[in-house]
Length: 472
Image: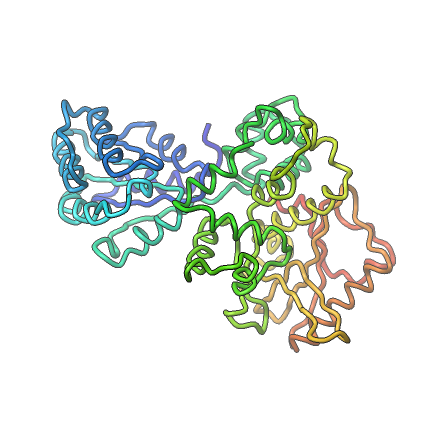
């Protein structure tokens, strides 16, 4: 059951009709549906398909490649000594395939590139020296290790430079796509329940596939994380281990960022983890950002060196808040936590992440889809005891002379602005205008789950966005 992905599916089908050989990279985080998309699009019909072996050494990778050749129809594959042998054998096999386009699908390719194996060099030779001499080869490579795909394939400056003909970055589902998925599976979820579930699982289709009909969203979360045989109990370790060969430094970084709402600078991260991992922290941050676990942003008036890194991944945030170190053996832990302080703090953070994952929908609600704009968070840290700091959840800096200061609030009912909070909002706007010296008009926007109570203190709000509009 393929939900959404119409654009990606159409593109793949167009590629299959090309009058030349095509080299396609499909990448995105683990469990986002890359393999399923490709298999469903081509109805599982490939001239050759193979999946790399996680943690397998060179010999294991080569032996499994040989087995895949035999599974595809080769009578007996000789022993493969290196990757040149492997790709030569693939070329020889494909010469005997008489059908039209020969679609090659290699899944989890990053796992095949073991140390000193010469894998990428052999792949370059196969594509440049054999496949491009023909018109009937469609090579689709796929992998969850996004940083590997980008550095070794997409931005390769060696033999594969500019050889990739197409690339597809498969993003997680939006709220709307998750709603369509829930409807297709007859989960009978309201939009509020879709939002609440998204705040925990994000838009990862694989996680949503575990949801059961007839259970409330809280019961489903209990079953996924806190039941004795919870389906996602060990997913955190599996997730990071599948993406990074040495996942511990990456886990250290997201663990630190999980404790800071507004994010941290590179220097602050290095200070908190107590080391710079031999100067590789920048690469770790880049890896995490490519996989959409974190985001980096610059505030107005700040240099690139002052960029802040913020944990963005819904699943990771939930794991740190409630699963890691949870010693409460209660299969109904989540259902019993819905009125707790911890739940209220987490829900505010999680809803804010959802909003950043749906910026385009927020712009559409504000009527500024066609306006060039940049989106930030904004933090002012006081430089003396006489000053007060402030933080703005989301800031939309527009090319039409307006800046939207967006306050994001999660609540089960309509949100009420009271006198103290109204004063705080005015104070935030005042500090922002003073410290940035902006000449643009500054509008305050409230993004809430269910809208505002329009009392006497709501008059300073120029625009409202409600969760319903994030489904657009």
